[in-house]
Length: 563
Image (cartoon, rainbow, N blue to C red):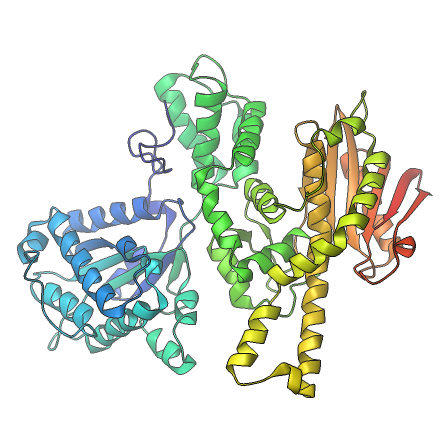
């Protein structure tokens, strides 16, 4: 028994499924009011299942006709005329395959599609369908964000024109139309410039009121989904298994299915007489993280985008606030992609969308940052019943001293906006080297961005070091969110817990950091803790940066580790 269908998605229509329609509210009202809207949600969160269920419901009710059309085939098509013709082909194919007599009747033979200028083809096609229907038309364009920026402009313009010209006595057009994809409407419009045109193109899509998203599963819905498996096979998920599935996934549909599938099929070998425990779900989560399934490829691709990488770096290192170059749209984009959970309005409290994504994203960001560590290096710190974290962090100080400068140069170059700013100035005809004002400004920007990159690097290298050294021998639990000005790590080994707090020198006072670490030690149930303080001044002599001090604080032993 599998929790996935045959194509590996978490829309298990062949096996277990929760009702799709309740996951989005307000769509019926939008259609009734003849409004156009956007539905956005991360990959493999059930968008297509929802849309098909909604299409079928509308067609069964009979008041309107609903057409579902995927634009996935447009991915990578940049030529505008080719793209417009391909969209017409996809609409026509959807008509033929709909199974609705009215739609099949008005579809065209493959060699007789309407001939018109590419800039009005979509408008004409949607008008033609609407005129030939005996009831109002509703259209769902799935995978709309596959459209490249070039084709996106005329596509939206034609929808806008049809929307504005709708009235019973003139040209007919769909009463309601939705764009469905990963992104909110603001990111579609961000691709369409100049700003004056962007605002006009947005007119059919009211950003504040008409942009919808799919809700993740609730804990009760996870219980209901897993309960379907219990009803069919008799295999029980203990309450702790439901709790741990909710903890690891926070209801992300693909992860909910993947955890159960890993536990039932892989760990327990489809032995339905065995109860699925919380420990099984924890092991399944660790397996998914280490195996780096195909689902996570999309996370890796998104982290290749500088705007996404900068947002996630700021969150993962517990920055006090977002750097100035990160816009609200960048933050919202990461939320729309399903990578980020929103905190307060100012961004404080933003965190990774769920613990599994947190670990996967961190591993992706730290790829290659453990260069130079020999295999089996960690075993010397894990002999006996306790972990020698003192020795491990002293080894890290040496590693950081030997590798940080080269890492910083490479990392700042790859993760900052320096190169793109330089290209923009050059494109604008500004020669930085020959202009003292621009050169000074550019140097200031470069220093700011390099400092921010160095802050992220220090945190990420320590994570990478601990992951590599302790991999398979000890557990790492991390807590971080934007606004904390720190990141907390709790290392667990053979029943013992070792709390570590990471901070950047000068971000907050030493006394406050020690107090916060003391509170985290209480949470971990430990009387010994480590405060790792990075000095981001790479020009300072190492003998002034590397230090070790052990202090007593309220009966607890705290080691202050300077790096």
